[in-house]
Amino acid sequence: MRPRRVPISANIGWKALRRRRVQLTRGAIAATTVAALVFTSQAAAGVPIVRDAETEALIQAYAAPIFKVAGLDGQSMQIFLVPDRGFNAFVADPSRMFINTGTILTSETPDEVIGVLAHEAAHLAQGDLAGIRQTIANSTTAALIGALVGVGAALAGSATGLEGIGQAGTGIMAGSMHAAQRNVLAYARAQEASADRTAVAFLDATGQSGAGMVAVLRRLADEVMFSSRGVDPYVQSHPLPADRVATVEALVRNSPHVNKTSSPELQRRHDLVRAKLAGFTMTPQQVGRRYPQSDASLPARYARAIAAYRAGALNPAIARIDELIQIQPDNPFFWELKGQALLEGGRPADALVPLRQAVSLAPRSGLLRILYGQALVATEQQDNIKVAIKNLTVGLQTDPDVPVGWRTLARAHALAGDVPRAELATAEGLFVLGNFREAQIHATRAQERLKTGSPGWVRAGDIIAYTPPRSR
Image 1: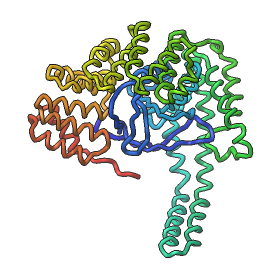
Image 2: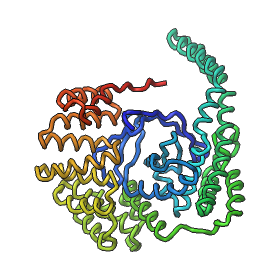
Image 3: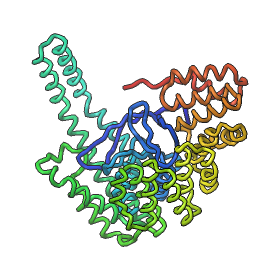
Image 4: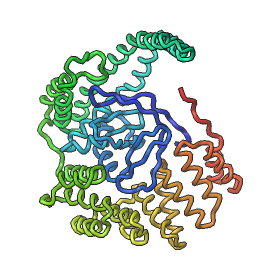
């Protein structure tokens, strides 16, 4: 799959009155540790994302039946978490979907998030990304000419000190793009309305209620009620939320599954993930208000344990996490949290047992294996290095776009005295970050010392021969 890099060139947003445009390369992710809710960044564009095995597993569980009825390949679909408290989700291309952490935090039931995912899946199933690209291409030929003239005039005015010409250039650009903009936004509004209808159909096909989708649209309608007064709906990329509520509500009302709710188990997982997000993204004071001591529920205790760990109170945090483990000893993410707290608290040897248990309970999680590998390498004990290399290799095969995993693997190979593979792992990490030039330097060093024709030698050659796509 790698070294291909696919730039995002279109973005269909869920949230009304706000469109977000993102440019990033696939998997350009930087991190210092891989563990529960690790904040990472897209090196190529500075777009932050969040990695968390528990949250990603839950979103995949929500999305799997929707993707199946939509005819989408759920195995190849990557769902990224954006650390933003706003309620938003969008698709970037047929293999990547983005969802704000705020979407999960503010959703009281799984049905609300599932409705959002159904809407975004509808965009993909309908080919909206390709359609909007073609609409842009069809609408902006003349506009681009005008825009180029405007840019030239603006630059000329700036260079000669004739500010009036610069202002005129801006006016040329605005005027020439206006008709094209309306054409594109009209197409986007039609997409949104169609995606709403298709999303309800997907929910019906999977035997799920669209009530959560209606709840989301009602909330959005309330939020934008004031700001939308006097706004021209024809220069928006989405229909006004009130209009969407009426349309979707009518469809859902006639569904045979309108009163169906999520299973208690799915609701439990949803509540735990919301608590985790709160614990990691809110201040301890905010966590305390959201989950006061009087709340003895498991999610509340989860959030408070995380808040204690983040506040640096390691021993009290471990005591609270141990209480969680005692309640649910088969929950891999409670063990993960304990291991993360101990590792980041400077006790990597103590982190091995809980992280080994987390991996044994969720062996398919690449992120958990990478975290376990980090702890093993951090002990700097030779007996642990071989185990670390095995877990890091397996973890990176599952989740290859994690630079810290490659850096840790490089260190493990170096500690084992295998310099060529250390160079190759370093190249892989740099490649994921989009630092292709440095990656090729290390790949060249690796290839010079690896056996000709071996898998490592071939992979190094792939990196060396890679040519980044030109920016448009």
